[in-house]
Structure formats: structure tokens, C-alpha cells
Image (cartoon, rainbow, N blue to C red; front, top):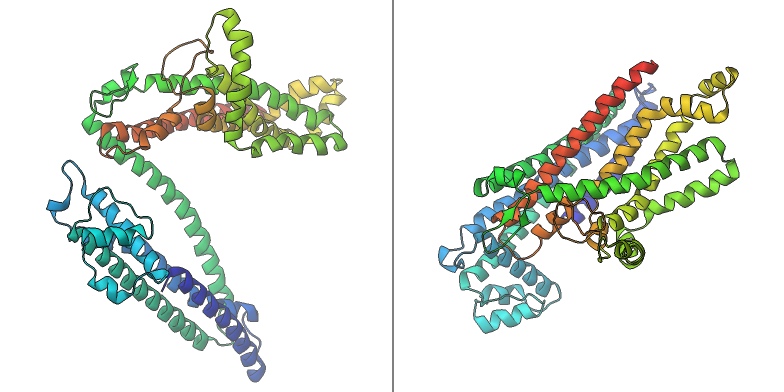
Length: 486
């Protein structure tokens, strides 16, 4: 019984409960000639909520807990003798899951029966031919314990899903009947429904907070594991980034941080002036007809995929800068450079600055403009001395949003700036960023516990802390500046 089917059945039970609950409330009111405490719809909502919420909670909890329980039980069935030398038990478990998925696929299309599966043993020819039917390719012969563990993994998961589905349906029907029988004319159904909405809103905010905590915790614990195998001093102070997946790596973060901030700075130099001028024009000078055409056209830039921007940097901007500026001036001969990625990234984040700044400028009260005009100021003087200072906190927020978008960009940097980690002031040289190296260190077949893989989490945590610090500093400056206008 798949979770999707269970959810659909629970939804159907809730819908039926709503209809029956509402009908019962109306019937009671008519038969007893008494006014209901709440509207009839609230009584139906009460039955529907009791039918859906407990079942969904149990099903969601089981989907979270079941993989952990199954992994723990099946892992114990795998003897140490089948684990490759220098490998990890998690790699064998990955093969177990792949084989279990292959079994489900073959069973689903009738390749074998459940009886044939139970009699099948881990004979090399038999199993490899069986797995070839679904495209599951393993590097070595399948040891008998691994194949038996895969069958057990599938059976335990199947049984668990059935038990969880049956329990969820039983709870749904049981609570629906209980809520239906509780319906009375004096039942405060509206209060029950509103308490549920309040609990739902609190849960949504809690999930957001817990998600943030979980992200930070995952980064922190993996970073701690990295610093147990690699010195923290060398990571933060070294100016060399040279990962060697066979040992002897030099993993200094400084070249990556320099490339990140250098490219982001170029992008902001391009985007902030252009974005602000566009926003001022649209908010203060452009007529309704021009605004209705120009603003959507500019916002289209935000919808273009970053891979398209990357190709534009690789094919057009990079060769242009190399052939017309870098080579004639003797500053470089590569189309991949900081300037290439920075210019294209700046074009990409222009809508973040212009659209938000435009909305913020429009939010400035018209009374401030009228007062400035009454004192004899011109329109340009009003914009410079009244409108922009009043909108400055929001504009700073827009710039920070654009900066965070630039710092987190990956694809444009890969295609436009290259993947070379270096410390240089020459904007026509290839460099790279923290995000690019996070991706490169986590891809491939390297062991997860190696420092060359774990360094990605240290890079991510460092970038998170620096970005958070910049945001806090900017918030402090903005609040202090706003006090002058209160």
C-alpha cells in the first residue's frame, strides 16, 4: 500500500466526513429547533480535520522513521567479510537499495513472481541476468549475503508501508466516526477549526525555523569532522588551493574567498548603478505606458536560466573582452576571467535591484515630494535630497539581496570565470568562487569521509557565516541611518 494511495483515501474520507458532518449539524438544528453555535460548515470541517490530521501525522512520522529502522536492521545482516577492503558499509547498503529497487521493477512488469524471487539465490549468472533486466549494473559479483539483504530490505519496507497505511486508515476512520458522533448544536466547532488554523500557522513557522537549524547543524557537524582530519589554521590562512584526492592536499580558503568577493564586486558595480537609474526613471519620470512595457521587459532578465547567461559569457562576452581589451593591453589571453563573469552576473541581477528599488521609491509618501516642491526644489533635487534618502533602507536591502544572489551563483562562474583558484588583482585572469568548489568537491566517486569531500561543508559554513555577518552589519547601519528621519 503506497503512501500516495493512502493519502488519497484519507482525503476521500475527509471529504465524505465534511459532507456528513455538515448535514448532521443542519439536521440537528432543524429537528431540535435550536440555533447552532457555529455555521454548518464548521461542523463539517471538524469531522474532516479529525479524519485527516491524525492519519497524516502518523503517515509522515512513519515515512521519516521507517528508513532509519530498516537501514539499521538490514545493515546488521551484512557480514564484515563482504565489505570491500578500504570501503564503507554505506557503499554496500547502496548496492542493497539498488538491487531492491531492481526487484520491485521486475516484479511490477511481471518478469518474475514472488515465489520465484523467494527461491532465487545469489548465483552470479542468475542474479546478474536478473538485474540486467532493469539496468542495475554492479562492478563485482553479488555476494549471497548482499542479495539476501536486498530481499529482506524490500520485504521489510513493504511490510512497514502496509502497516503504516493500515494504521493511518484506521485512525482516519476512527477519528472521523468519533468527531461525527460528537456533533451537537452547542459544539463549538468554529473554535476547533480556528485552533487548528492557528496550530497550522505555528507549525509552518516552526518548520521554517527547524529547517534553518537543520541546515546549520548539518554544516556544523560535517565541518567539525573536516577539522578533525585537517588543520583549521591551514584552512583559514593558507593561500594555496590544491586538492589531491590521493593525499597531500592543500586546502586554503583564501583564494576562493577572494574570487567570490572579486566577481561579486564587479557584478554589483555593474548592477547597482544601472538598477538604481532604471528604478528612478520608472518611478519618477516614465509615464504609465512606458512603465507598463519597460518594467516587465527588464524583469524578464530574472527569468532567464543561469546556464544561458553562462553560455553568453563563454561565447560572446569572454572572447570580446579577450580580443579587444585584454590581449591588446597585454593583460591576458583567456576568455575566462573575473570581468567576464562579473559583467554577465551584473546583467543577471539588475532586476533584483531595479524592481525592488522601484517598489520602494513608489512607497515614499507623496507628501514628502509635495513639501519639497513647495520649498522651491526641482524634481531632480527632490529625488536626490528627499526621495532617495527616505527610500535608502529599502534600497540597501535590495542591494543586499542582489549581492547574496551574486555570491551564490555557480553556473556563470564555471563558464565565464573558469575554475582556477588564485589571488590576483588582474580582472582579466581566470578565478573561481566558493560555490563552484563546493560542487566540484562533492561530485565524483571519492570517499565521503575524506578531507577533500568534507571540505565542501567547511566552505559552505564559512560562506554562510560571512554572509550572515554582512547582513547583520548592513541591518545595523540601516537602522542607525533611519533614526535621522524619524
